Image (cartoon, rainbow, N blue to C red; front, side):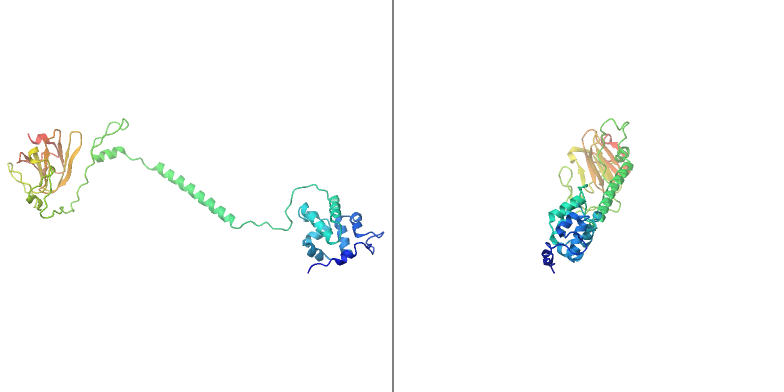
Length: 325
């Protein structure tokens, strides 16, 4: 319920009674005669029989601030601008001149510190979620940095690839110096055929083509038993697919008795032909100078010169031109 200040307004012009003031001074004159502005406000409040609760209800100021103002305990009050507003509001409720009350307050308490202070009794509470979020962010950044450092350390400790080992796998000789420029290596060797892999399926009636595009005989398309060892001077009989050059462009023909790896290289190491021949399959070597033949099992390869069997391949590596001698 709003405070009724009618009684205060009616008693402003009447002299104060009792033993509080001598000489019949008015409440307004008490601002100049009291020991302090706080004491003057308290004496006028008591003169009108008002309590601190009445003043707090009328001014919306905390009771602890009003008591501190009456007793001039300014260290318990907020910053100076707030206190000046409290003095003005307190004096206005009592019917006093607010400007004169503020002037008396400035006289009692000179302005020595102009910095603002936070209101007393107000708790400063920050966002409780901020601290866990900051901690989580720091942990994530630290984990990321540690992971990068670990990756760099592991990459430095990894052994570098051995270029000499790679060259040895390809079958070429190691150069005397690996730092003198680019290294020429031969073509990669085909992977060895697994012994458990069955023979390729040949559709009945389909004839495999030779290297010159001509079809082989119908008998070559049929799966045959492994070729048996024939006596020297026996004519060449196709028992499987025939690769390489045409008969008119070839003198030396190599035929497999059983599954064997056959590689034909040129003079510069270029691979002309590399295949795992099945039993009965053959290769017609073209009349190209510098060709050489390599075989995983020379005894399993028959050499035909001019269509006549000369015998097995003499060695694992041979020059094709010497086979025709």
